[in-house]
Length: 310
Image 1 (cartoon, rainbow, N blue to C red):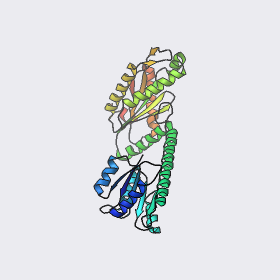
Image 2 (cartoon, rainbow, N blue to C red):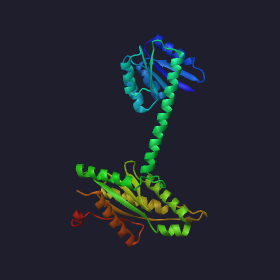
Image 3 (cartoon, rainbow, N blue to C red):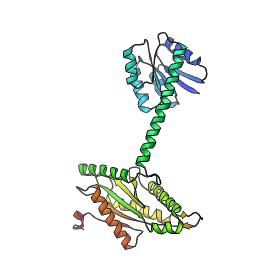
Image 4 (cartoon, rainbow, N blue to C red):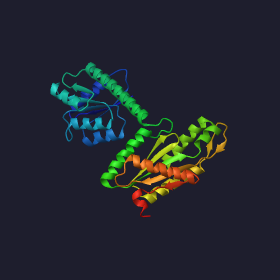
């Protein structure tokens, strides 16, 4: 079933288009017709519309503005209606991303049917191309096992945040998290179980950070978590909460044996003129100290400029 919205302030023209639509065979078509601005807006907001006809000359809000809105929101394919077929109107319609153009003078059922079919076919191909592009972007930027941003992506986001912090002096913190004795997990339970541990750790990270925080897989069993606009003390609380959550979580191998894992974390805060490399280097040093001290802990490492003040 195709739901079609016909918007035209001329009742004669509107009836002509609607009558032609109802005569199209091979498709079940439900037609909504209106010319009021509010009714058009309500229809676009409240109904699933599969196809929109919009007259180029509408009261209150020109047809080109409706075209721009429908196109920007990717609501439905749109066919521009015009009183007469002129090259200028057609050019304007397609420049506003209409997928079809239909002059109302000498309108015939065959012409309307053809325009509808071509427009819907264009829409399907455009939506498929969009989906393919989004999938390609996901494959390029996402770690396929954990579904978190991959190393390249998380480092890119970190560099962007460092640039903003150096410009606007907005504090943020960085956590480098490593799964303790992960090699033993693989040796004892198998690599398939090890992959499951990485996946679950990623889920636990996502569910224990804010929407504004950024987490990614840095490599192997290491993860980076960036906490924008966060004080050092608040970052420590967040890191400790995550450590405790992971420590209490249960994991199972292929034989349904239950085991637990712990994580060590190196926590550092941004300092003036830091770059991504210096931040990660300090976080890595903090992580190393956490492992030396007993693992399963959050280790803070102050920047050199702060160490003398403590």
